[in-house]
Length: 213
Image 1 (cartoon, rainbow, N blue to C red):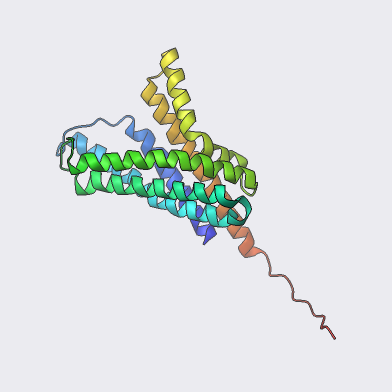
Image 2 (cartoon, rainbow, N blue to C red):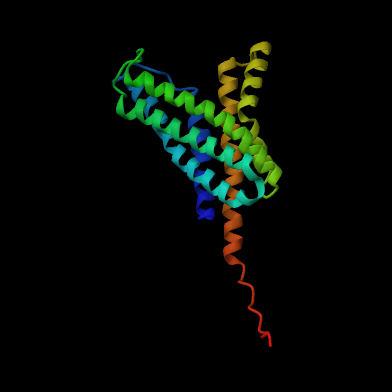
């Protein structure tokens, strides 16, 4: 199970990063227009990365549950809940209510609010989950660190971009968050996959032939 969750984390991380970056350069149009259909397509693809990341978080938790105690369990719970809320919000916005305009109080607006709530939950959960994973010392430290810092790194990048004028604050914020979170899950997913593969290949320990008398 852990090995398969690693593959899910790799796939989810790659799709998350690629679609998040692509969406920064996709124009928005009114529902029914070509521009909107293109925008809708990449948002739907981004949403499909979330169940894979949920599976990856389950495997990450299972691989080190006995090592990191209640902070890790709390971080896992918040991370999983954040991904789940984001998925529910994305499904609502880009499947159930995709033809609705952006208007206060309608299904689309509520779905967007649920997505944002999930993103904030994920930000807090990832920080705790990443720190617990870092302290457990079982998986690559860079992956755990990226899980921990992706949101504050995005904020800091936005502030620096705004002060220097090299990039727009929104672009820098989104770019750094997309790449750091996606890369973190790819690194951790690869560790889970390769660790599960190695464990499967190791021979079972030989049974003792000694018989107590």
